[in-house]
Length: 560
Image 1 (cartoon, rainbow, N blue to C red):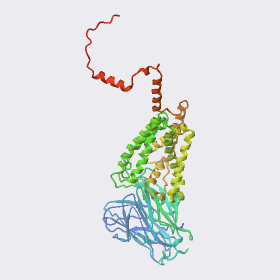
Image 2: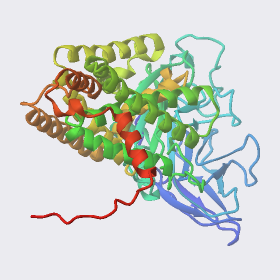
Image 3: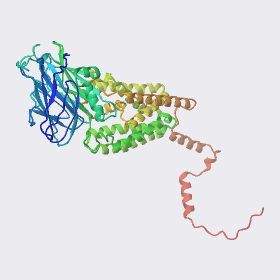
């Protein structure tokens, strides 16, 4: 990393022209300055008394969700300006140049509040975006971000080697020798904002922490390193409502210098949407669905094995709902709420079918296999939600990922063959407690929901294998892990203690009915043997209700 010293003479002088046109703001190098730009207002930044050792500078400006325009000229134009939430401009200096002017304005005729900083670099530092052939600016130090429900993609222009003032920069693609830009490496960093915090203050504080090279290296997490032969692109997991800052640091391994691109942030949601925006992220249908799921999970956690039919219904409901939600989402273009509602209805049918299969056939092992697959699914999801799931072997091959996932998922039910009751109780405790965590996530974000959410996204998105699935792990997540463990352990211990002297599983109602009917047929001493069949009793009762009552004549009092 390059080392440079702040010069007290490197000041930003703002020239005040007219009240409605320009505003006076003074920046200090390396010190962030909060700026509010009103409509019809332009801030002219003049950097004066620039030391000769500075070869280029970058000015970056960040807002939370409103666009701001940075321009080389007073009137923004194509190729000389950039309008974005996180914008930056790089200015290469000429020999003898000691001052520089840049302009900041609001493009949407509304007040824009943000924070900005100026960073100088020497001639030995790499020049971010100097080999740009994709974006509008000639030298583009910006990171461009795009997100959807499943993934967040960042792109940036390749860098070039640094050069002295006035010198011709090295050619970008003329040669791949070690004295060209092809020796440069790009470190991709990720920094999570505090969970459940959408405030502007939190964003600006975090931006100021990681805007430069040292801050990002100390506080951020390096998720990957790209060589100059790789595509200048990285894909990450989208986490709606969770603020994330991405930054790229280009390094010159020969000179041991580095430079930072302009950091970019996203919440993977819109602040301007009145329906399902960042402030109202949770859909009402999702909250209702997972609230009911959480209550059912809490019941199953503590009483699932005792009320076996209820447990079978919940497991069948979960299995069928998940399967048909994936199927409908992939094969139809139906709205999310419709898919969720139809999947829930089909889930009810699946739960009833599982209960009826046990009621009719009395096969405990067949039902336990479904229960074991539920625990196996959660176990495999948890294993692959760890850093193990981000190994290159899983990101490069869907086949390897799904084979590993299925092996873990199928291995768990094998435990149930030897200890079916214990396995069923463990599933009730673990899966039921996790359902409570999902219900909490419908109201308060927690990263534990992405244990299964990442698997669902991988089912629904063909290209999700290339995505880095890192999620923040902060205080709320430790609390939720504690809740999950405490609920699970308490539920398992309580059910094992309560069921220790009971039969392993309740008998099938249909088989019990067959045995009772056979007993009544063969045991003539049983009073129920002399009862007429149910159809005959119903017919006789119907006749009594429809038959006209005749007068009985004179009644003689009973003599005691």
